[in-house]
Amino acid sequence: MDYTENYDLSNKALRERYRKTLLFLNACVPKGSEILDLGVDNPLSKLMREEGYLVENTQGEDLDVAPQAVANFNGEVVTAFEIFEHLLNPMGVLQQIKSKHLIASVPLALWFSKAYRNENDILDQHFHEFEDWQFDWLFDKSGWRILKKEKWVSYDNKIGIRPMLRRFTPRYYIVHAVRK
Image 1 (cartoon, one colour):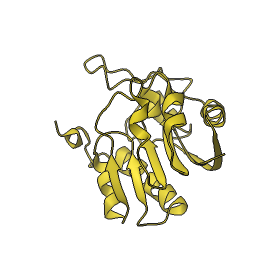
Image 2 (cartoon, helix red, strand yellow):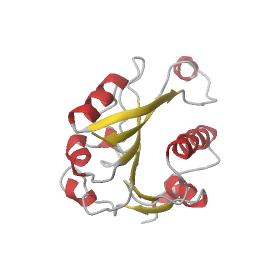
Image 3 (cartoon, rainbow, N blue to C red):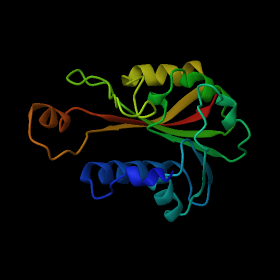
Image 4 (cartoon, rainbow, N blue to C red):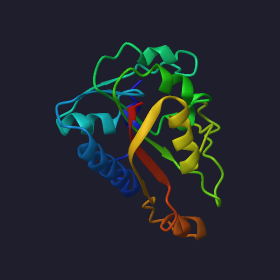
């Protein structure tokens, strides 16, 4: 199955999220670095390759059941963009990563919106939507030290109370961490 079909890059919110993610990555990781991107090949991993990174992806393994799937990667950097919120236990994966650097992003919990759930696709659901302090604590407890972090809002042109609140309330949180 080609998972890239699920991403519509004409979507302004998605394009903006990818742009901000790439800016953060470029500020933290030199181009040409070998990266293991958690999750199947997707438009963001393709954009990372276009930026000059050497990217390989995991193969769609259930990382809750098989967190050791990441342990054999010998490159300097692992990325996990919008992955950990789907896992029941992200700590298992975080402890298995052998790379020195980790760049990860998650959607933040919003007081005015419940966690994302897709009743038609069991894999496309959020078990966690973190508050920033919870994500920081998860990293600390699993052996990582956060060097840099950033939040940003969602860029949604829909009309309504929640879309308006999303323009002012940070929705995404990204961190650059190193092994302690």
